[in-house]
Image 1 (cartoon, rainbow over the protein chains, first blue to last red):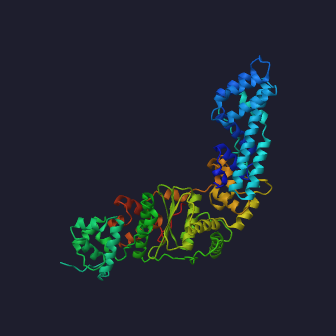
Image 2: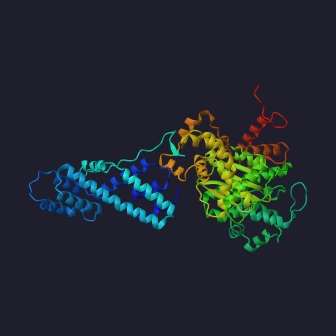
Image 3: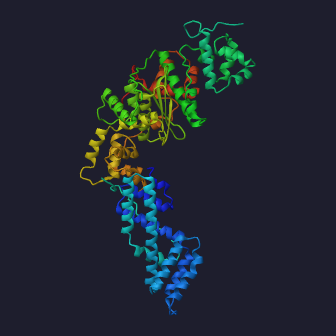
Length: 190
Length: 399
């Protein structure tokens, strides 16, 4: 195994896995996009309590009986206790409140809030990875990882991920794994 | 009453210092301290020290007691041709109370000692065609290893050809004693050089043939560079010292010469945009090394990107089943694996049978020398007799 800076990356294992793949030029852009998708999905499962997902789901889908958006924002923010000590959960509440403020509701609002949360989180994570490599790796590797992680995140369909995350309404399902290339005639690009 | 010790058939008295040295080695082989032996024989430790230094004559009765304590015989202690070499102390700092390594050392020592003793009895001189030592120079050891490996290949007339059987190469080409035996644990190989025994290598028969090939080539690297230092190679050992890095690089360069790799790589991957598992299997088979070794070599030579092997591992590896799919009947049988379960080697058997035929050693002496019981020894002698239908020991060909 290589001894790249991914080992000391102060993030969860699945983000380290993404960085490891980004360091290794043999992984395709699709492989990296899959890894980024998996990392986001796992982070969501770990960091967003099921009860919070169900509660926000209920808020967005229940018939609107409040006249002012500000009242509904208060309802969303009242869920803060469910996200105590969960940064991604907190972020979801913030974005859900913003979406409500903008007057979006129903499934569209819910998906929008989730998508924004995921995008904000991945931007934050991207910065952490970038800074770590600037500190720990030679410039050429930093440039390579930065570019490949950026592409991996840009290639992902966040709308689809948001739908997936919210369609499960907090039910924990076995996380998806990227397809492995196990065929005899599969290998690394020359 | 003191007696002069007469030995062998020469009737020359053996020098006391020689007897003392033999007794010391026998004691160390038996893993007994001077205090243990002195207590067991009810003599002072200083007396034992004097005996081992050759400063005090040893009585026959004492010799018999020593032999019994050390699990040997008076004959084995005093026979002129007997080889008294203890390899264990040389490996001691490497074994660190590691039982497996100690067991491997004992296997190597027993086989080499028995072989040399039989050669001495029969007057057989094993040809030593050792290459010159190449001490490790300042600078990048990998560059030197590549150069030294190419030089050895040239000396042996190998050109760019693959070396599928490192054991035969080491034995026939260089005159190194090589034994392939089952060793527990992760010991891949042992190397030791001794003035009496010569260069000796033990390879682990439990490991696949390709890995054994690599271990043998690695030990050859030690033989070339630091001949006088014994070495134990462990599975997946990461070389930290310059000597270790040299041996690893030498082994790789010897088995997979850069030019040959580049040429075969070009042929095998012609027209492909990928290095696939199929390519890796074919290349590894051609060069007689493991699939990992070939991919890592391709990475080192920049024929594929760094991290290619990691990619294969992360994607399920390259399996034996896939190898069978690709190679089919091309896979070579592993001849050494079956023979590794026998307590002795074919060469030892032939030497022992000849010594027995010439009545140089009795059945009991041979059994003790080869660490066999008499039933096993008789079976072995019968097997050899069946082979020796011709005076030169050639096997009988089926009509």
